[in-house]
Length: 209
Image (cartoon, rainbow, N blue to C red; front, side, top):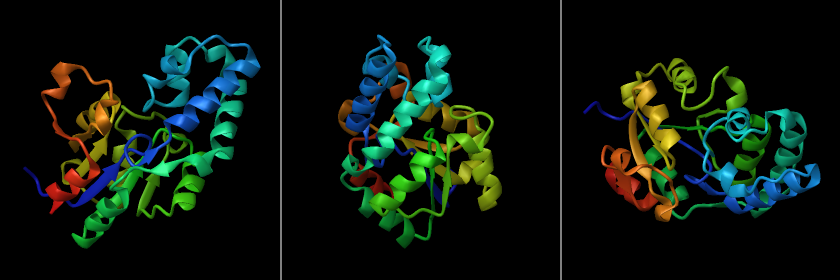
């Protein structure tokens, strides 16, 4: 196995617990627009770019209004989002090992950057969905990270909690660890058997040690 020189993280469900805020914002936005589409229909695709999710669940025609209401709702509620247990310690141990640290997220930068500032999450690089032509699981974000860090994909460990994170890592050629996050991910069993899995962020810190 190639030595890890950089650890990159998914954001929602991996470093921060934001699904409560997502649910409130989604339900508020769809109610205002008269859309009958529950949060679980949206949630199962979290990790993909917003436009891709809307196309998948048949809501592309509402794209502009829904994006405005939903992302404004999550921005105004960002003070309710909390870091997942072990996030600070894991980031600190990455630094202690001399590893680069980044976040690659399907959030837009207008939401992700203020959230990291609010929660005092400091990373070397933040790459958001609006910075690339194709978001996860397309490897463009990873290739951008490689260009910025001068690293090969196999020197980067990506940590995520969803099947799309695994697909993203495989497409890019990065190493991958699945954060199971109390079993809340929705990964098929055949894929679960192919990846290293951890139940807590502290377990990743132990692996890196």
